Image 1 (cartoon, rainbow, N blue to C red):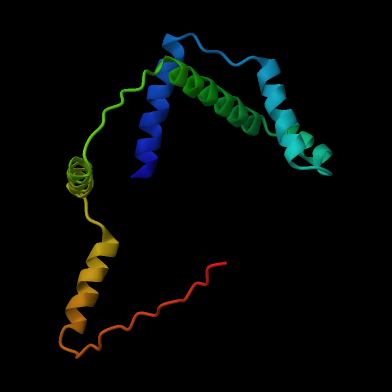
Image 2 (cartoon, rainbow, N blue to C red):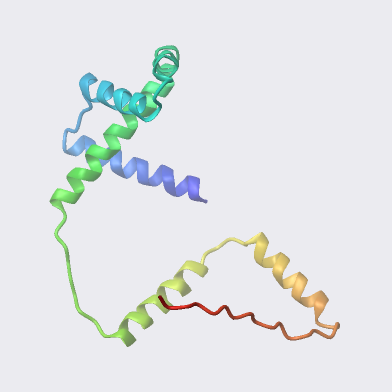
Amino acid sequence: MWQKKRIKVGLILNEFGEQNKINVTEQEVQAEVQKQLRMMPGQEKMVMEFYQKNPSALASLRGTVYEEKIINLIKTKAKPNKKEISKEDAEKILKEHQKQDHNHDHDHPEEEKAITKKDTTKSKATKPKETATKKVSKK
């Protein structure tokens, strides 16, 4: 499921990038490689060889830079829409959002397992769980 969403987001970002004529220069890719090198001190030679031998890894870096540029452009173009609401209204919105998240057309195997597990334990007497409290000293 998350893969499908990731692909959709990628397509949307790519379309936005094309509409806004966003390009990644070779200098920007090299700057990203340098950033990667700085993140791995002592392994610079190995990292550099990796990118030289793996054009797909370099293309992945180019994609990362491209997405960052798109996101930054979106941030600069975005206009915040602030609206003050009461706590009760916020709770209603959250409840509606949670309902929408669960109203989709596929099953969750982990939910089925939980239901089956609950059904098998009904006949057994269960002891209420005790909750442990931890004292925290204020200093």
